[in-house]
Length: 23
Picture 1 (cartoon, rainbow, N blue to C red):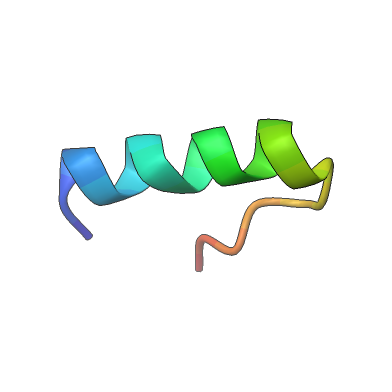
Picture 2 (cartoon, helix red, strand yellow):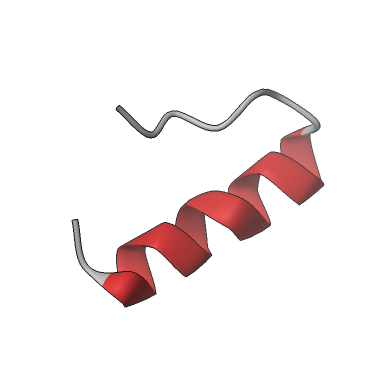
């Protein structure tokens, strides 16, 4: 997983409030 993708996931988590989808 790239750093940018990780950041996008983190933003998604903040926006949706759901747990991170990182393995």
